Image (cartoon, rainbow, N blue to C red; front, side, top):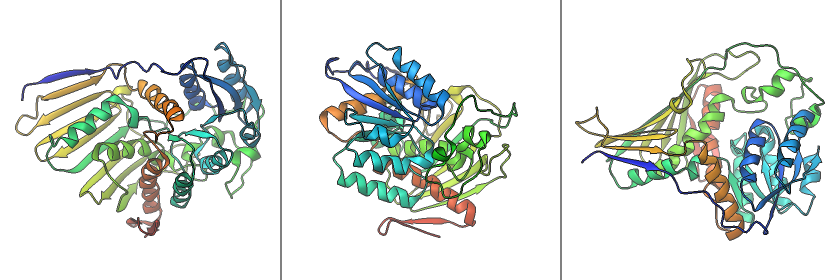
Length: 396
């Protein structure tokens, strides 16, 4: 096969919606990610940000200011998400709170009749995921989980390559993600009022106000699944997409000690997931490694018996057997990984109009979160965690 080079532009993410036909959006959780995704929504002339809710006053004020820079946007401020959901003028909500709130807020948003874009990981436990998927099946609402690889041109092309049989039989996928979050700096401090009790929300274990926990909740097991779940949900969803995979059969994990100050979850973990499609998904994450350039910090290698495909954030390469020094197919996403969020938001907006299923519905969001939840259960028990898809229960 001759070497072919493709540039994937993905086409312009221009909306077909008329600017006069508005979608009223409410934002719940206005931290860094929530505010960023809000600005992606604002690129679309059909969207108006009409409400923003946050329990930390500086985040709320910053998001209100950012939204108001776009003409026609004058959002109302809320400090209790239930009052925002009670606002009947709001058509859809962006939920970008810490992960321990996702399950409750999604159920409440469904009950309020809102369409939902919720950041990943979808939930904290397998039991929550089963409940959410059942709620989705009963609902007519549009639900998109923020796993943007599902809408990303590069990954969609990767899925096509796997489906055509170019790689032969793929029995193993090796994925890794490298970074370093151990550098110590000044202790985080609050820059304004915080409703700490409301922020803790549905978590049973109450603790006194701790700015370090508030700013680093991803690494505290009461509120999240650690870095392996935070990033692993993305990686495993990409694997599921590329391989057209179903729920895992079992997951085994090994991890090191936590080294980040205030964290009780490991920063170095290896996960092995077994699938009924007869392949293994092996994921290694090390957030105590050296720093890499953004485009190089994550890679997936699909080991076929005829060829190997390497797919990262922005590049894809296929190497044939016997010629593993030079790729026979090489592709690059012209607009880069950041554009995946634009495409994912656009898909959600289009589905609000068409009422079709979006690219990352709740069942797929749960499938990705489940792998990392099983990994954490394996870490705690020291045993292989199995998933019984018939009973929807974990077996250890």
